[in-house]
Image 1 (cartoon, rainbow, N blue to C red):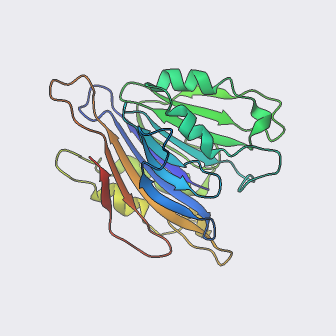
Image 2: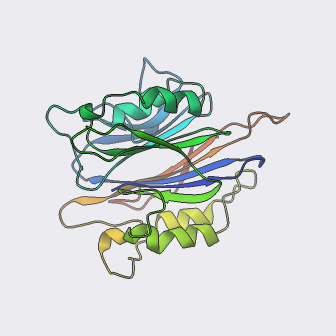
Length: 253
């Protein structure tokens, strides 16, 4: 059950801020964000060694893509393709709108259910595949302005324990300021082990279960307004939070 937090603010020098936590089994091998794909040298992201895809990546055009499993669909399934390849396919495009339109045509039966976020400095989309049978087509919806949050259910789902506990906190927190190097408020929230009021461990933003399912890493991506006279570069920050707490560090920017 991964989680993505998105701040959209059109007209701002940094119109898109994305925070993400990856929850996965500890035994599934992975590598931190880098340019892992020789056939996609413009893509920077975390590598899932098992299937070769990514849970979060950004390209040199300023498009970011994040894939999340929906409830009851953790892990691979025989006869279904890896969802991590979809994040890479999204980044074959130079803008979020073109990427969302291309991925909307995929065959749903080929994948287990997922939520996919694709965004750039102008547009942002949520691709929703919620039918385990794959009969229903994907839904593509634009993301609203402001702070939104998604995990294993729907966008801003008030019934999801983690969203119910943390969406108000992200909305109240100071937004990251890449120009000033100020990230602390969101970094603290992404690393919070405080559970939701129900007390379920997975209601926390960062957790570890005896089963080996845990929060393995956090990331922050900031996309600049590409139309500014003095263009900025996208910022990509990363921290491996589980099983060892590590300091945040810059991957790019």
